[in-house]
Length: 323
Image (cartoon, rainbow, N blue to C red):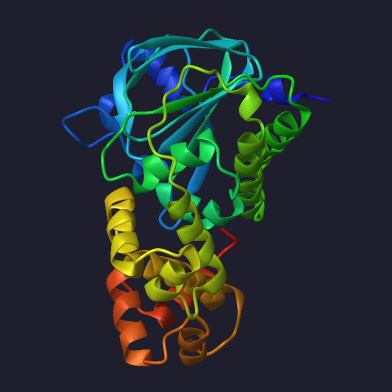
């Protein structure tokens, strides 16, 4: 029986081009003048996560991404310079990079099998409420997704001996190599579980990362919105935190770049999407379920946010395999 490693050793079409032309085809990764790798070059519309094998045999020049990236060493090792720091990952280790940091990668050999995770920042809004223990991983995500300043950051997890982390990573690699109609849904669940495991495994973090934002009010804001999205209000949250509502409003805006109302609206619309695809509830009922008594207003903001109507969104996604 052929093992996973053997299945990943053959050349991809991308690697065949690399070996033929001996250079990185920039247009394959970005349409921008700067080398910013774009998620839409890999992700299908409406998809938030993809995992793929990193291209071997050539140095990747300095670049950034417009998404959150994880590099996981399935076999061999990976040498790269992240910001101004040289990092060499060994088998079983992983690094998480936000979309603001530049890195360059040394060429990998034939048996250096690196798995790249491409994750849209919007995915992390789904799991913020689960990361309810303060720590560096939560702060890293808040900085990356909702920070008002573009801070380049990364986290290096020396987690090769952490069985729970390795088991989840292996399951995702299996889904990548042997996909079926449920693989995308499975991978999303596994990534969410992995984020929680990494948050718990702060002891495996390389201790040299410096994280700036660690704000308990922001954590509590996301938890409150996730739990009380139907009736949530800034005034009620301020009362819970025993803070003036105007001060809390300023802190939320400064730290996330968004108002409380915008954060609440994003969460409500995310839930509306799930209900449209996963239930047969009338759109008017869904609007009420997420806190909008005015159906016309719900219809207007849904169309503005997703560039389509609720009914068209339902028809488009309800018949598709789970995402």
